[in-house]
Amino acid sequence: MSDVIFSDADFNAYRNLIYNESGIHFTATNRSILESRLKEQLRNNSISSVQAYFDVISRDKEELKAFLDSITTNLTRFFRNQAHFDAMEHFIIPELMKIKKATGNTTIKIWSAGCSTGEEPYTIAMLLSEILPPPWKYEITASDISLKCLMAGKEGFYADSRIVGIPDAYLKKYFDKVEGGYKVHDDLMSKIRFDYHNLKNDSGQRGVDVVFCRNVIIYFDEAAQTAVMSRFWDAMASKSFLFIGHSESLFGMDTKFEFVKTEWATLYKKSI
Ligand SMILES: C[S@@+](CC[C@H](N)C(=O)[O-])C[C@H]1O[C@@H](n2cnc3c(N)ncnc32)[C@H](O)[C@@H]1O
Image (cartoon, rainbow, N blue to C red):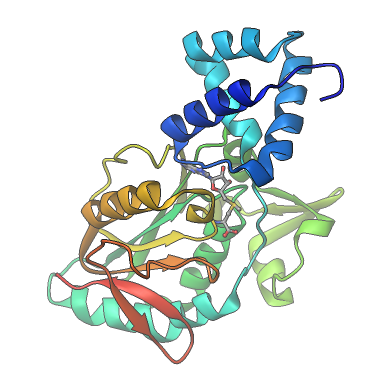
């Protein structure tokens, strides 16, 4: 920030606020990322000092949401980490069908937590549409702290450069070619509920069979990660499954989840 002063005290005030509001932990090494995002917010709001903007986000909840949105990292893609979808197809879905059959409940509930622009929930929806035999159904809640991402997900439009990774047969079956990209079919869209949710809070969901929370907790410190895991535990059904990103781990963390190694990928299970 050449023309704006961002002192160590400002950095600490901002990172404490971000941490308390979202669990996202800014270290000294990624201070420059925070600085550049902040500079953009100041420009957008015609505010010249970081202290004045701090006052704004401390009293204006909507601007605080916009600020938190601006500091998130939303990198994602369709069929990211294919091994997870293989484990879903060959291990989790057969297991859930066995577990749930006894209860007469034929709906599989999925939560894509930290869904970014929707590539993850749409990937899950395509896969489940392909593999679930009737009378089995599925419903997906896709949540994020970024309103911009949620809007993109709800719109279901992906530029040509973004559809890499979608098998041709799926692209033909679930998307329409439109100018500059592809648009998801309405019936696939109708399976997903995009919802603003901050993982700092209880989502109110219960009985979820599979949680995907991939490449999200990497931005949290251990205390925030443990708190999120405890909220997932409460949201999940007895005998349910959790995916985290392949560079993330619950190792050494105080959680009741069990580590499961399948032929396809590693994941976590709530057994009780
Ligand atoms: C790198 S993206 C991962 C997207 C997708 N899960 C994937 O693996 O491709 C991380 C997402 O987590 C969201 N996120 C970060 N902190 C969050 C929080 N406290 N509550 C909800 N979403 C959060 C970000 O907005 C971002 O869209």
